[in-house]
Length: 503
Length: 101
Image (cartoon, rainbow over all chains, first blue to last red; front, side, top):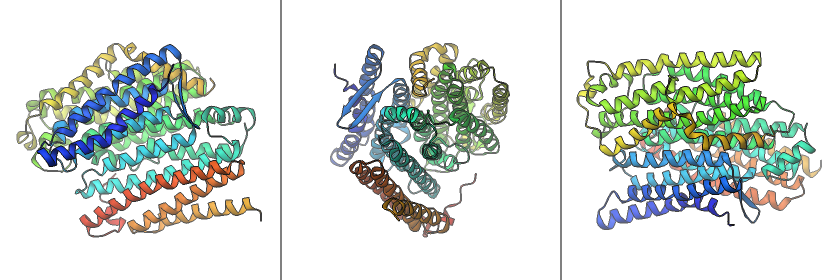
């Protein structure tokens, strides 16, 4: 049986990327149609669901799929499928959403080309089976996201965000490469599974491999925004077009997390406490993210800082899983990956919708401040409702999805029966309460009786923009009530993580 | 001095020069050049790793791939620098510090 389904899954969005650009450009030049690129992009991403469904079926029937071309191997396991699913979901909805949002922008066809490219690249990153291949996908993801962050190239703030992001990511990727070189020098191989075997049989206490692990944590940590390597994130996520903010916060950080887990899983045999390390960084991220978010006055910056805190929850869940070998922690961490993708995607998209109708649609590129939101519910009841749902979900209010995923992580922490972890879990719960201190005022602001001047002068929200908002809101509520709906993605991913770490 | 120690010294030297450059310079073009120096340390490290593990061809092909990928980053960095010069009239990175934490 052919396993080339992996190639289709990765190749379809990647091959569509230049096509979107060319078709969009030619049809605009020749016939004056400006909207072709959007529809081609939407068709390409919708078509990518076909290989995804096939890959899922084949995976459930045959287990891990491998595609070998020469010396390069791609491997599709539960973790790859999880990443591919979240990427495709958000990318499709963002394309739909951007249809009115980006209409008429300069370089619109490039935007969609890059959006398709970054989706394909992230799916590929999830399937990489050797360390260098992993780095290459990681670098390709970084390069596409630089262009998307600095998309508004006439705004000096966007340029600043782009430069900061590029410099920090590039240094991070050099660190990763150094780590790859150390692993190659010590073990003589780069295949993740082969490195894992070599490490546990021969090099269990090699200082070089310990250094390599530290370099991976630092290098990939820049992309995951592990504190203190997070300083690029609030700038980049708030200056990018809103659809891209949703992609960056919802999946790009998580793709970095997958890359880190893959590279560390190869080094699982080194006598090192990777689980404890991740837990420690998780706690740090929660505190720093929440405290920094408290004092923000711009909505998108605030949401960007809250991503730091949520990465902290994921790190906590996955760290517990690696430390104690309990599958509930891994499933909780990956469930939170999905639920954060949904909630933060929804939050950025609805904040973006308000930004669009209050500022951007009138050619004004100033940021959306918290005070602009006052009374937004009076004119935009639907957007206000879904925005509030997203915020309360992020804050962890039951019965929304954010509560369920945080709950599972905390339950996993308690299941370890470890006093220090009890304290950390209690601390995480308190952090959740702290985060309400900045989510709740936003909700309050949206439902004020007296609309702000910006709201009074605002435009109506385009219909196409409301569809993805509604779909995501339904997801946030429905998965909160029935968390088992995502088991088909979360359970194989958790099993794959524990298998890779030998738990 | 054997071959290996010369290579290690080269990697460390390039790494140090690149990091120092990143911290010391204020011109955006110089920042990009410092990044290039830093990446060259990684290229040398990969070739060295291939040599050390007895698979020099693999190390060299990895190095070439890194050079290709890194060129793309440099091109984007320079494109950003051009835009920065166009809109701010300067390449001083201090002028690029308006976004507050």
